[in-house]
Length: 158
Image (cartoon, rainbow, N blue to C red):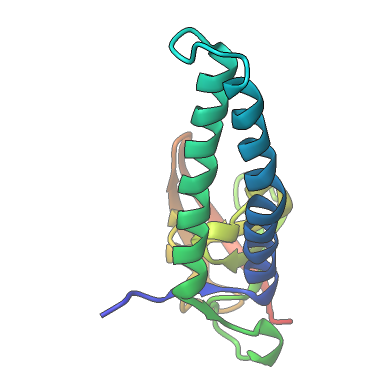
């Protein structure tokens, strides 16, 4: 059985866009670079040729990875979700119990996580601690810098 990958529509669109760019822009550019380097003669000592072949290998590997992820994607429209408890797609407002600092995170799929943008992976320790909890609950999360406690201030979808 193929394991589905939960993803928001935005995350799916970003991966699909990267796939199109890699196949329609990067692939032809790299093929051109290989042809150009080949025309310079002796391939055994041709650094441009080896660099272009390495770029091609990296690009083709990423294309295969993107195609696999997109084929297994289970797109979940978070605008259609609701409820009191935290689940995939929820935007959660947390208060750090030590500093009273508020942080807002959206729980998203592994491939679209970006902590700087406030998107945390469904498989992260923070998300695992939050799933199923409601406003007013306190969660304890083991982080590299030590254990942190957060109070859930708000849960919203959409």
